[in-house]
Length: 124
Image 1 (cartoon, rainbow, N blue to C red):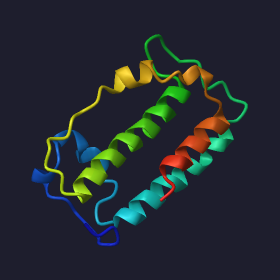
Image 2: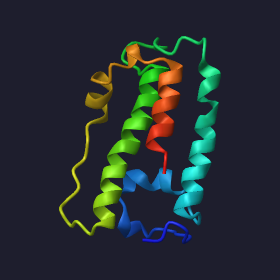
Image 3: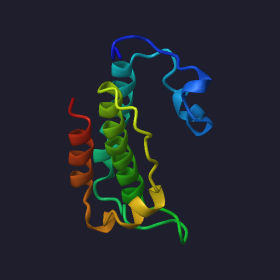
């Protein structure tokens, strides 16, 4: 796998659920896609001073939970990528995002902590 090669995955290479995500990176290199996404998250620091631990409606995620969901998803996909690169053909398990969020302890994370975690998972 070349991270500097432009790619357009074929529909048979991914589940239908991922189509909306993949259309955002169509024709990019992996490095370009990761950079574009990281640039978007640079605005996280602007949340400092806002209440990131309250939901707008019962049962919805807080801003902190949403950001931690993105960070956790990065971690899950990093594990999948290393298995792909090492040609591990073991079926890849899914993960329960709601279970991850409910056990994330997001209420104890500050904006600065979330920013640090985001950059830690993207330090490549």
